[in-house]
Length: 330
Ligand code: SF4
Image 1: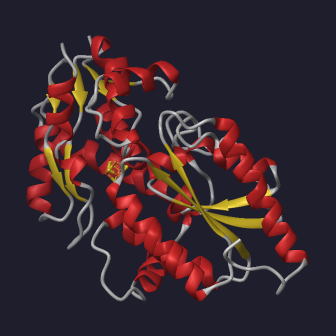
Image 2: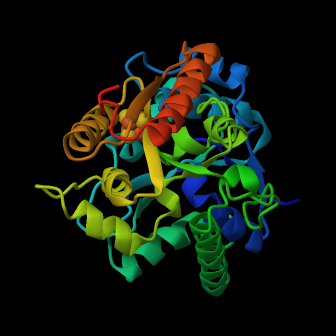
């Protein structure tokens, strides 16, 4: 019988799922993913996580609970860093400990330390440790990892073409929808789990598209452009996702085809409060483009978000008709 590996549909699922899904499947394991975020998952996550945690971490706990009784192992790696000389939020480094202290009766966790900054040799040691839960055959693990990496690059290439996870098939390997080229372009800023989880984001991508607005996210930008614009900051942004967000915001200030920016932030996220504040100040100081921050928490009402999206889209359309007559602080 195939070994069942559970992958929670939260946090960096929206970044790395194609890699690890292909990796485990190539090794012959069955990958089980938690259901798309729903009310029960949010409620369970909120009940089983410390109050101080941010919403995405709470929701991740809900996904763990959704999976825990139907898999042999849960894949909850300890992610330390994804790019050289940069860091990610410390919550990712402590995730396995947080999950095991908050959720009872868990299956064994695959909680290997993954650090993409380290040498290839060290990275492969971690990959071998992860794969060894399915097979001890080193060349099979090497092959599976290379398949996973290829899939990951294909996935990222699709995103760069503007195809978001909601536009792809369930494995995130192929697009399933044709995206029309719409009139206004709006940049959506934030961490990937806030932007791409349909329930957490209150379906903002689809809502904007329904208003004939084309959505641009940091994952659609090419790395060289992000880095070039992020380097305009007075100090280097050493959080990887912060750099991507800032690089995208700076780019959006200059691109005349972009009408405005929306930052989706999580209540309880220290990083978001700093990054959103820096981005907002910079946009207000150096450009006339509308910028708004929508903060999400478990109590956020969809009606309130809908009203704000509607008002934002109306404003950018109004501005475009009445250029030069509208304050950027509006
Ligand atoms: S960056 Fe913010 S939202 Fe993401 S895990 Fe850390 S605290 Fe939570």
